[in-house]
Length: 185
Image 1 (cartoon, helix red, strand yellow):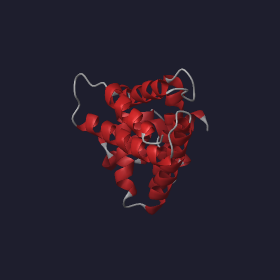
Image 2 (image 1 turned 60 degrees about the vertical axis):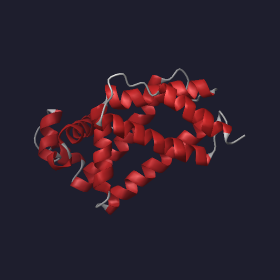
Image 3 (image 1 turned 120 degrees about the horizontal axis):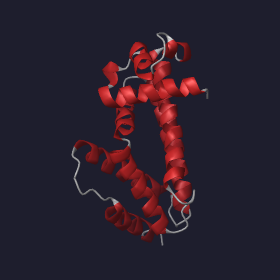
Image 4 (image 1 turned 180 degrees about the vertical axis):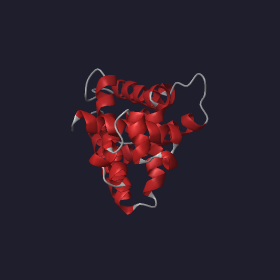
């Protein structure tokens, strides 16, 4: 992916997460990116193409965040998994809430856009399969992954809507993961 294309997508994510779906126009993306008028439409001719690009960029950035936040790409113990997941959740709600809000705006938009819905579903499926591979290292299975992914989405959403000042997801995640893994034994 070219640097300018990434710049356009990152500006679109910033715009979507900070001002919402209605503010997302090619012209507004150009302004946020600090690029000449028409730049965003050079890379993404339609709004649908722009939304699809945003979804793909968000997914790529999630993988990169996991690697940056964790000591090793795949956890070897439940403690490693809990630590990594807690760091990821805190990052999503405190460090980069705008990007997380952009993701939720895409989910909402996907309800009425079949092409975007397909992209969002595919990305979610890939992320869930990747999470399943991480959980398999500590005894998790597909059902465990589905429950955990759903809980993480809920924890993140609730913290974005009603943040608690002393938010620490680690104790809840530790309890949840140990219970889920134990139920597989």
